[in-house]
Image (cartoon, rainbow, N blue to C red; front, side):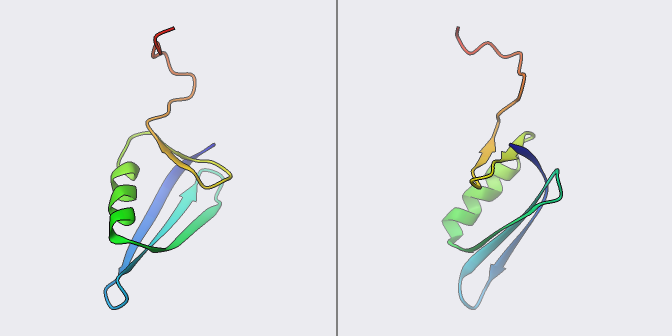
Length: 74
């Protein structure tokens, strides 16, 4: 998983679709197009998290902390 460094969100007001471009820590760009308003709104809220990662299958994960000291109830 790579840390998301920057992102750009766009909204096509004519066609009513959203676009999201993510740049990860390795410099790879991930482009997501034709997102609904609900999808775009949800993703934007996820991207506000202090810890946001993206994996090779384009899963965006928020809140995951590698080597976290949080006890997961074990």
